[in-house]
Amino acid sequence: MSSRTDKNVSMRTPLANVRRLGAAHGGTSDFFRQRLTAVAMALLMIPVAVIVIMLVGRDQASAQALLGSPVVAILLTLFIIAGCVHMKIGVQVVIEDYVHSEAAKISAILANNFFSFAVGLASIYAIFKLSVGS
Image 1 (cartoon, rainbow, N blue to C red):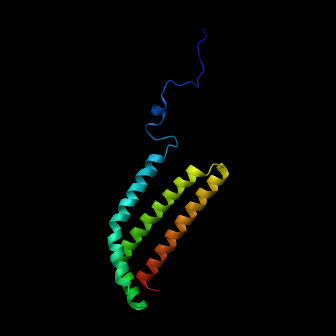
Image 2: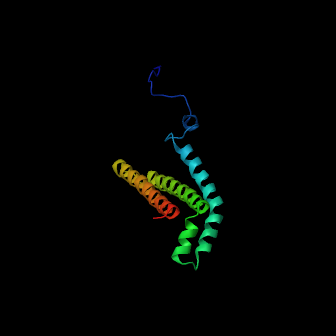
Image 3: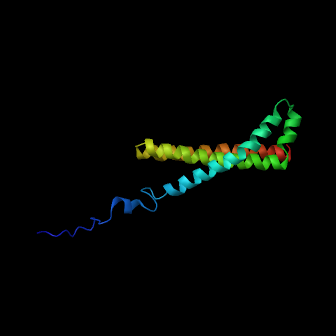
């Protein structure tokens, strides 16, 4: 009889290996953050829809006055932040699942992070410009 002294052999089941954090050691936090941003966007959807309906038929000056109010600016900023984070996580999951080349995967994730940040920053900048004036 030969005894196995190989240190790579584990007596743990596959379920025990991934029970806490998952195979990637980060999927649980992404899953939770994506659900949290989805709830935030669902709650903010009604006020944002009301703001959009209030903009129908307004001229530029009155639309700027409405979008420049602090409450509207805060609501839109929160909606944009939640949307951009939700978008970033969702696209990153698709990239991780379907892009198999490691170099392409890293490049796509970096581009996704940059794009999400740029969209969020440009949108928040526009809201800030409207709220403080030009």
